[in-house]
Image (cartoon, rainbow over the protein chains, first blue to last red):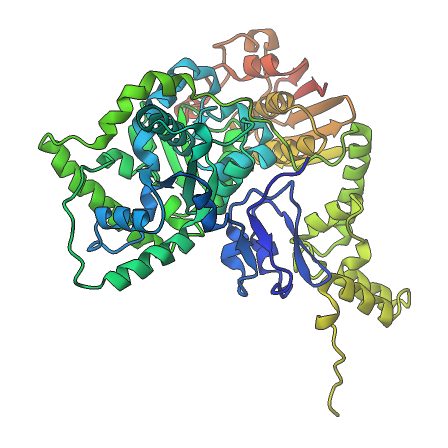
Amino acid sequence: MTFFHALQINEDICAGCSHCMRVCPTEAIRVRDGKAKIYENRCIDCGECFKACPNKAIYVKQDDFNLIFNYKCRVALIPSVFLGQFQNDISVSRIYSILQDIGFTHVIETEITTPIYTLAKNIYERENPDKYPLISTFCPAIVRLIQVKFPGLVDNLIPLKAPIDITAIYIRRKLKKEMGYSDNEIGIFYITPCAAKIAAVKSPVGETKSNVDGVINMDSLYNRVYMTIKKQGKDYKEMKLPIAQLSSDSILTSLTNGERRLSISRHSLSIDEIQNVIEFLEKVENDEIEGVNFLELRACDQSCPGGILTCNNRFLTCERMFARAKYVADKERNGEMTRQKEVEEEKTYLMRNMKVGEIEARSMMTLDKDRLKALEKMKRIAELKKLLPQIDCGICGAPSCDALAEDIVCHNAELTDCVFIQRNLEARGNMDHNESLKIMELIWGSEKIKNYVKNK
Amino acid sequence: MHLEFTVIENDFVNAGSASSSIKKTLKQLAVNPSIIKRVVVALYEAEVNAIAHAYGGVITADIDADKIIMKVIDKGPGIPDIEWAMQEGNSTASPEVRDMGFGAGMGLPNIKKNVDRLNVSSTVGVGTTVEMEVNLG
């Protein structure tokens, strides 16, 4: 089975520099023939490679913007982090109205269903103390990380839809009921801050089909909106502010601690950045963590503001989101209602449709389905590790000596790919220079193995 | 497949490294996660026992296609009455160790719950060997 990946490598641009290979948290990248290659069943779409690439050779596949015009009713499903991309003096209502100018008929914020999502999570938590610590499925890169690297923890994942899906279901139902649209007239487009959300829409975990019709990258939509703002210039007259869509709590959901502060758990943790998460999950898997009920885990530093498709500094984005939440909180204290109240009417329906199917483990660690063969491979790996230099130089095109050893027993590499082994063999007369040069060429491509003559 | 680890007396900081390594091995063998969990829990418990109550020791693990046999061998004070120590709540821990939050008397009973075969042999003044076997399914 293959999995959809939003992260793709443009081989025309890729220089085979291996920066991406070194940062991949699941060791999913190798260099062959001078280009980075992704092992699709290992990739979790976290975006670390995208951040590390100095040549912008890694891109995120998105839907064509004009796809929205295939639908009569065109919904922009925007996460609150999108509004955080714009400076404080650009109002929320101005962005809403620009989104309508460029083609959308409706704008809804993803986090509008947060109260229902929170309620469902809290009920699940109360009913499943045997599965503690429960892990939020809010971040799709985390769900995939657990599937491939921590298969023993899939039962700890809370099998509920994330706000993106709940809100898509909500707005579709509302538009059908109130405006009389039919299902195929409604197109819901999510504006994504990261690659993992795209993968979640294109190949959802625990569901057969996503509730979202298309995905538009946040940076490309930002450009369109920003262009309009520039054209409007200083003379733009602010329209009367509509009632705020989101409560202050909901605005903050996608930030680190956003879910944790709404959880009923007395003991919970909030961890962001993928290496931090991996470090902690190792402990959870070893059963070293006691007395913790709930874990909010996010793949990016500062959570969604750190997504690879965002357009501004993540700390500034957080500040703007906090400022917006504070502004709304002041209003809430004065008794002003937000539009979020309307979602309450659909609470029963949404709560009934909250569950997702089984989240399967698909361990990337398995050496062989046949255990005897796996044991043989393991012994071979242990022998190979003794031969390899353990300095993880990456010249073999694998991220570490251990990864090379595994690749060798799985027939994806040769021991002679190691430059130390080559030198040894050459010195003993067991390999001629052309042969070792040929190996380097197979890994790094002929471009990098140019003839070099030392000046006398 | 044979693995060996050294356990150092009073080194709680590094408790769990043997468990982590064995966990990785079992994952590579595609052992069911619930079985891996039992192995890890039992071994971690035995490892902490050796760190806290004995003077460190050695952990060995032998893995074949259908089972894992783990031995935690310490040179500690030994357990005078093993049957008594196997009951929940009974502990031979010193007051200092209890102050650190260990010695609740759940160690051996908890190991027993998680393994398929358990054998504890001990000589007072010489040491204790905890032998645990788990079927890998």
